[in-house]
Image 1 (tube, rainbow, N blue to C red):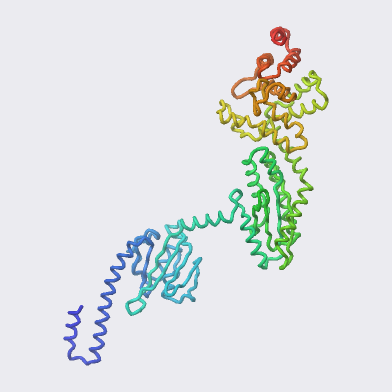
Image 2: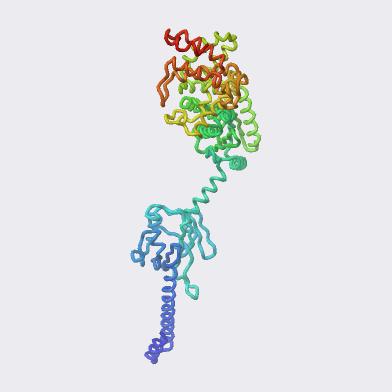
Length: 529
C-alpha cells in the first residue's frame, strides 16, 4: 500500500496543493479499509469457532458474518444469507422480518422498543436481551439470551453491529422447575403455603377488593390413612385438589396450606359469589363420590370476605378458618357415617365371600352354642364386615390366580389390621374391631397378626374362623374347584386342635352332619366322637 501511495503522489506532482491533500486523504482511507478487511477476516475466523450463534451486519443492515453455530440454530447456510439485509436474519428465529437486538445497536433504542423480548436492557453501547425464538431449530423453538454490540473503527466510527445468541432452553427449564418446586405443593401440584401467604400480602396491597377466602378441610384423612395406609390418603388429597381446582376460576389461587387443609383466594369476589363457589365445590364433591364410592371425599368449607381496602386479609383468613371448624363439627359424624357406608357398599361390590350363605351358617351355629342376643348381633355383623380390611389390599394381589409370593402373602395378611383400624373409626363397628383383628388367629398360635393361641383368641373370632373356612372351602377359587360339604367337614376335623377350637369344631360338624345323607354321616361320625 505504501508503494501505491508513492506512485500516486509522483503522478500528481503537478496538481494543486488542495487536490493533492484530497488525494492523500483518499489513499489513507484505502489503507484503513485494507486494515479493516484484514481485521474482519481474522475476526470472522474467530467468530466462526464460537459456541454461541453469532451474526454481524454492516451499517446498512446487510449480513457480513454468520457463524457455524448460527447455521445450526437457524438451518440457514452462510452462503444463503451473506450480503442480504431488510431484517432477513430475523426470519429463522421469529418467522417474520423485524428488527432484532443487532438493529437496536444501529438505531434508536427507545423508538424501536422491546417488542418480542421478555427482557431488554441497554448497558452503555451494549444491548442485552432474553426471549423465545419459536422458529429456531426448524420450528422446535428455543429460549435465548442475547448480547449485541457495535462494530467501530479505531476512530469510533460505526461500521456495523454484532450479536451473539445463546440457547438457554435447558437452563430455563431448570429455573422453571426450581421456581415451580419453590411455589408448589409436591403431592397435589397446588400452590404451597409460602406462595399463598405471599399472595395474601400482594392482594392486601392491591385493588382487587372485595377479596373472599375459602378454607377447606378434608374430612376423614386420618381415618383413611389409618385404614388403608398413607398411599390411599395421598390419593384422596390429590383427588380433593382436583375437585377444588375444577370448582374455581383459573384466576383464583388454590393452595394446600396444611396436611389436610386448603386455602382459596378469590380476588374481586363478593361474599355472595364466594358462597356460590363453595356450593359448587360441594356439588363437585358429590359428583366425584358417585364415580368413586370406594374412597369418598368429604370437605368442610368456611367462607369469609374482605369487602374493602383496609380490612385485614389475615383476619379474613381467621374468620374463614373458624367458619370451617364450625361446619366440620356440625357434619363430622355424618362424614364418618358416609365413609363407613361407602366402605360397606364397596365391600358388597367386591364380594369377597357369599355373605348371605355365611349369615345363614352363623344363624344356625350361634344358637347351637347358646349365644346371647347381643353376641348373635355381633356375630352377624362380624360375618358381614370381617374382611373389610381387604379393601386396602390391591386387587391384583387379592385376585391373583397363581400362587402368591412371600411379599404378596405379607400384604394380604395385613388385612385384619387394616380392618381393625377401619372399625375403630366408626361407632357402629368399633365393638367388633378386636374380633376383626383376631379372625385369622389359630388355636395353636400359628395364625396372624398377633400369634394368639387357644382361649387368648376372642370367642366370637374363633367361631368366625370356622364359618370363614367353611365358606371358603365351599367356594370356587382360581386354583381349585369347590369342595363338597363332606370334604369340607373332613378338613375342619383335620384342623381341630391346630387351626380351630376343637370344642367348636365338634359342635359345628355335628350340627351340619344332620344335613348330610346317611352314608356321609356314617363316614364322619367316628371322627367327630
